[in-house]
Image 1: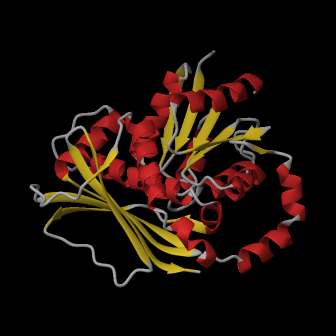
Image 2: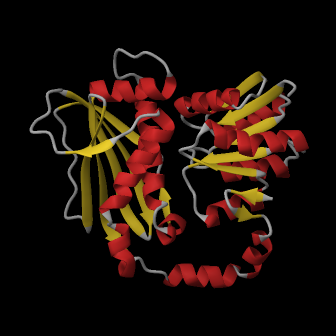
Length: 187
Length: 127
């Protein structure tokens, strides 16, 4: 039996190696591979992959806009816990959030309702999962929280002195958004 | 393929719709689609309904997908019905946990309709 490339026979060895695996996990550190974890290309690849597969659009990195013309914005946050603690943050104006939700569901939206927020939360969840999946030790030893979504005007997200931070802007068609990876603790 | 009664368990209603669309694109004749927003709700649905296929997320509030799967087996709900996990968690360790809990398939989000077809159709043919 094959599960995304992992054979069912792996289970037997998994049980036998349980103690060794636990020992390895307990002593594992991401400090030595921080250059892999913070590689900015992982974030770009994750965004391109998620938007291509779930929305069918080609998304590319762009320059940071000089200023936002939209007052209302949507922010989704998925927390990381385990060997890395921090968060993946997706942020866009209302029009981009509506466009993303429309592309995902095929439905029409005129405002940021619960379905739009749900869709943006899932996008953020998949971005967080795809990003941590780029580094095997991170994928196996870092959990994800349930997405939290905030919408409104004139709010800021503040994080104190992170270990590292990636903040990239992307576009597809006339839509713009940014994704931030915040690492505030690395074991 | 004959009509398939399917349970989709995911805390995101948008993802439940996307999974349903992918199943239809895969060519499944979906007679009934039942939905649940957590493992707890999923167990309630299974106590009251017969299904031919279960697709479940892992990270959910109230009861996660792995515990949902363990409870299905422990309570002998839906015996012989294939369960496919659809989740953002992609490590080998998560796949192993899903297999140990009794899953027959594993699909990583984001996914394509083609991936859903490849992993789900053989399970229905074998059931």
